Image (cartoon, rainbow, N blue to C red; front, side, top):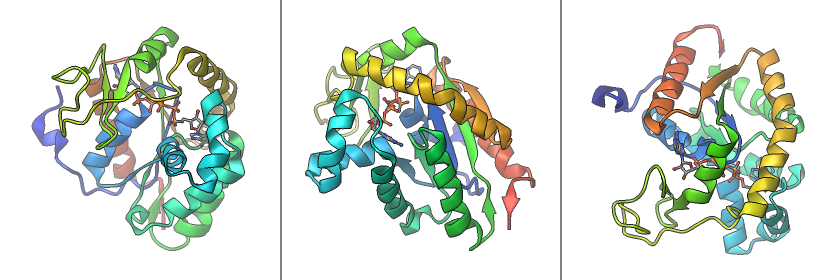
Length: 243
Ligand code: AP5
């Protein structure tokens, strides 16, 4: 259990937080816990893309086929979308990137954006990268058991975090849904794509001294405590500050 005082929002500046991990590793779940504690927004490229698909925007129409197959959406489409989102005023103090970057080209693009747009303007903290590792069978159980609330975005799992009433959100009573890409075929493609991209990306951030590995196999509250601890340490250390 996380002590109540540890759950209070923190005013420390943690800057940009990057969450890496396989599909189902808990990036979205932990992003919400980090957002609640540090008062910075979760920016999920998957959620932004799904929202575009739902609205039938030009971007959504272009992205849908890739997402349905479990492949990455072309970088150029994701860059435009993310540049616009990070330009919102709520990102000025920092943000949590959930699902971005997915490859080295995206990581290099992000470094350039952060340097050009953010680091030169104010006193910023260099990004910290939390990489959640979860063993393969655990990922499969999490993805096939995931249900989410279309109204408030809360994530459940029928095996490990079921709602109080089956199929219904505890917060607002909405009917829970399964994600369209949480079918066996698409899950296996998503995991394959992740395997191919993950090592070079982790090495990229390890070389920069930004990578923190987090054991994502542990229960959700323990993973949250590990993530918060890493972020508190990051904010406390003077080293990553760029002013
Ligand atoms: P995206 O939406 O980013 O999906 P993903 O990376 O496959 O990750 P998930 O959202 O499936 O998993 P998660 O790690 O957030 O896990 P969660 O917290 O929900 O991307 C979808 C698609 O969009 C991609 O395939 C691609 O096409 C496209 N896309 C997105 N970003 C892109 C980019 N940058 N470039 C190109 N294309 C892009 O948890 C999963 C389940 O586990 C839940 O049920 C949860 O309750 C449970 N759980 C969580 N933590 C624990 C725990 N510690 N113990 C037990 N259960 C747990």
